[in-house]
Every structure is written in structure tokens, then in C-alpha cells.
Length: 189
Ligand code: GAR
Image (tube, rainbow, N blue to C red):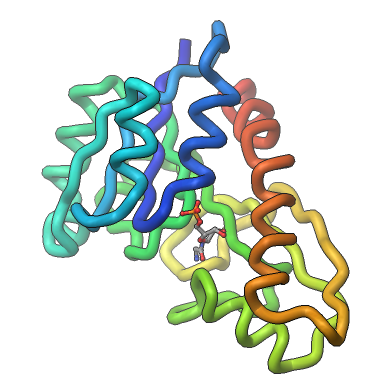
């Protein structure tokens, strides 16, 4: 059994979807959820499914050690960023080499980098008149949204689509693909 930690900063619909997908899994256990925000809905969602969640400050994420200690406590083998808006520390990257993946709500390398997260991405996609958007699941390295791509899927963006419409389409792709891709990547570690 491999233990996974999910890092999430907001609503946590992806975290919930991932936890539900692996509920009866014999190979993957979603052991713990970590967040930088106490006030967000992810806690309620995951706690209701029996998964504990903890909050760390930005300083603690940067320092790394308090987070690494918590991950050791839950014997975490692999980290999944699902709507996590803080940078990952060098200490954490060193502690989990090749074992941290992220989902980005656009087709990287487009619409990635610092400040490109959540609705900012969909606003930019619509403002640019893009005909498509999508998701990118990638390994995490020292730079924002720049690690090796594992999987991409796209959706159509029509001239009528609002940023909220694009967010809905992108979320549907995330729910359909992210758990399956996690399963595949973790099966190889
Ligand atoms: C997701 O669309 C995810 O791809 C995005 O935040 C949303 C979180 O939704 N992540 C980023 O923008 C990371 N740069 P959720 O909290 O409902 O899962």
C-alpha cells in the first residue's frame, strides 16, 4: 500500500474526487491532506470522508521541516498537488525526488508560471480568444509549472464561453483523468 498526501488551498473538489476514487483501493491510500489555509472548504470535504487535514503557514511550507515531519508521521510515499497555491520548498523536493505531481488548469507551457492559478488562468484564456484549453498533469520541480509533462487533455473554448464556463469544462477533465493518472504514476514507484 502506498500512502499519498494531497496538498490543496481552496475548495478541494479535486481532493474529494481523488479520495472517492481510491476509497476501496488495495494499492493506494489517501493518508492526509495539507493546506496553507484554515478557512477553505477542502477540510470539511475530506474530513467528512475520514481523511485528516492539517494547516501550515507559508513560513512553515518554505522552511519545509514541519511539513516533512507531518508527512513522515503519515508514512507518505507520494505527494499530489490538487489546487495548491504555494511554492514547494527545495527541502520538500529533495525529500520526495520525482514523487510530487501537480495538476494545472491549462495546456502548459501556455498560461503557466507565477500568478497563473485558478480563475486567473481561465480569465486569461478567454481574454486571448483561445479556441481550446485543458489540463496538464506534470512533475513538480524548482520552477512554477515547468516540470516534465505526464498527461494533457484538451477541451473546446467557444467565443460564447465565459471564464466560469471554461473552469467547468476544465474541472470535468480533471475529475475524469487525475485519479487514473495518479494511479498509473504511483504504480511505477
Ligand atoms: C483546479 O482547477 C486546479 O487545476 C487549479 O486549481 C483548481 C482547484 O480546484 N490549480 C492551479 O491553478 C494550480 N496552479 P479544487 O480546489 O476545486 O480542486
